Length: 192
Image (cartoon, rainbow, N blue to C red; front, side, top):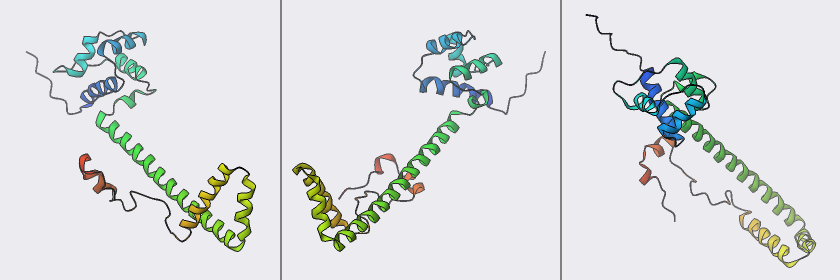
């Protein structure tokens, strides 16, 4: 009687099976539609085989040809990209989005600083040359454009002495780690 194999300690097959399910669900595909795509990619596989890969105990093993076809169907050029577990993919996506959000906040702050400098320069110029504001309004021509420019000049005058003319609801945000530790229902900040 043959001895049973030792249990495996590398969980790549399990991670791959979970990843296939993750990729399929992320695209809104059924087992049948994934099977059809695999067949179109030159690797016929039945929908029940895909179910067994994702859900069965023990899971159905994946052949090398199937691995290559799954990678192709999911749009990966390298099969290694499909071997990361779903949790790692979610982490990388969250990190990418966090970086994009952080960059957007930085760019907004830079634009707001540039706005303040420009407003202060304009108002200093208009203080030094009082007739310039009237000339700008006269040059506008029509009443609607004149009102638009006048509103802007009023706004500029109102923020002239301010260090931070914009309304920023997150002016003093909690540090990111603390913010992320708060349950989503409690993250909103009171307005007022």
